[in-house]
Each structure stands twice: as C-alpha cells, then as structure tokens.
Image (cartoon, rainbow, N blue to C red; front, side, top):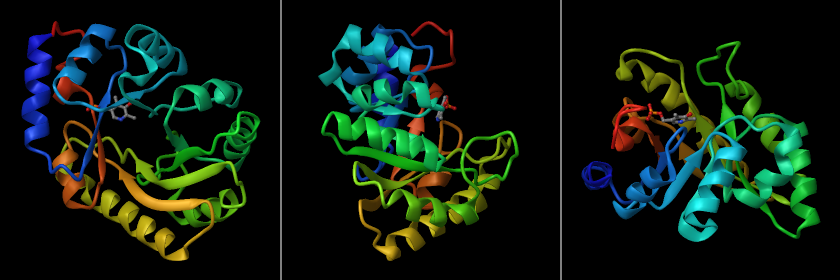
Length: 223
Ligand SMILES: *Cc1c(COP(=O)(O)O)cnc(C)c1O
C-alpha cells in the first residue's frame, strides 16, 4: 500500500493543479483506495454502483468526491443519484430524464457529463460528436440536472499520440456548447485521458483525467 501512496504522489506532482485527477478504482480493494487518498487523491471514479457502495461503506461517503465513470442502467438511477457527486456517462435523454426525476424526488440537482463516442465506434457508449449539441439542448430543459461538460474515452489505440484528434474534436464540441450558454449548464469540465494518454489529453484541453494503472499498478498486482 505504501507503494500506491508513493506512486500517487509522483503522478500528482507531474500534473498541473488545475487538472483534476480521478482515481479509477475498478476492482481495487478499499485499502488500495485508502492508500490513494493518503497520497493526495480527492476524487474516486467507480464503474459500478455496487462497487461504489461497497467502497463507501468501507471508507465513508465523505472520504472522497465520488464519480460514476462506467455505464449506468436506468434502474440504478436512484442509487446513482445518492452515491455520486458527478455522473460522467450520460448518453441519452431517457437516462437524463430518469436522473432528473430521481434528483427532484430528493431535492437535489444532479451534476452530469455527457459521454461522447469520439471514436465513432458502433459498440461503444456515448453520443456521436455531431449529436452532442442536440442532446445538451434537450437536457437543458431538465431543471434537476446540471450539465457540467463532456467525457470521452476515445478509441483503443496503441499509440497515445493517435488519440489527439479525438481529444481535440471533443474539446471543440465543449467550447461550442459553452458558447450556447444553455440553462441548467456550466460547461467547464472535459474528462479525457487515461494512464497511457493523459499527457496528450491535457495538452488537448482535458481538465480532468481518469487514472487507474498509473496510480494503482497493474490490476491484480500487489500494492
Ligand atoms: C478503467 C478506466 C479508466 C482508467 O484506465 P487506466 O488505463 O487503468 O488508467 C479510465 N476511465 C474509465 C471509464 C475506466 O473504466
């Protein structure tokens, strides 16, 4: 665990403070997440509602800011609104409407990012870049949702430099959305870049990166 804490400190020291580092915690044990928090991590990203719940039971809801970075099923929307401070993976009006309804029930505005399928891969989640504006305009009518920006994975390419055009297009879409000044929106977050590609993503305008192996080591590896 001391290794995780040290690795986190090193990685954070190399990233500008204006960039938020989300520790992508899938399959990690609470002790590993605790070590990352000790190293300076403030935001934990979970792919599944159940894993977030388990981590929060072990560490405390207030131990971190919690983000959902995996796909959300509509039947888990109620739990998601309770467990997460930011839901990064909204890619349909139906899901946004469900989150809006659940937020309204408990008197909370639900902050979200719209997920963009910047690689235009048929099997991937996210809306196509050209459909982002239409979805954002529709979601702007939901008063218990606040759109905070965009999230993208980009295609799985071996060479991180090859991801730059996908990051750059997502950045252009965010800037275009910000100029619309939609209601119930504050378009300031651009979540893109993972362990292999976060440097390129930051150069292309990311304000938030999601790091797993760079912080925790290879999955299954002993901290
Ligand atoms: C796992 C995961 C990451 C982090 O991936 P690494 O390559 O381990 O840094 C980032 N974003 C999402 C959505 C993930 O599922």
